[in-house]
Length: 138
Image (cartoon, rainbow, N blue to C red; front, side):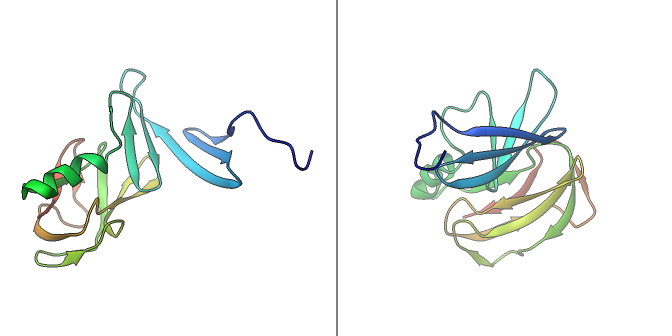
């Protein structure tokens, strides 16, 4: 009914591990994967795990203030489809830096803050393990 306020987001399963979330007059697609004891969700370029206390973008910002390197790691076993940066490139918060493929999904990893690419530790076509360090930012 038009003009009514919903009690919360509406979630619709689109397929195995793929959900549409309708909320606040917008629609997002969320991917959920991993074994039952280690589930993770991929939404809007970020990976969320059940044991995370703060969103992923909050941790790198603190590292950036101290000058410590920020490392983007593979959220799960994946194949590197495209590396979009090379050492010395400047990136802005939200820029895609690498595209992974896992479980037939493309997973773009985004720069968590404005930074410079210090190192690229993978190549297109590489198979990477969960937690593998892929890109170092400073």
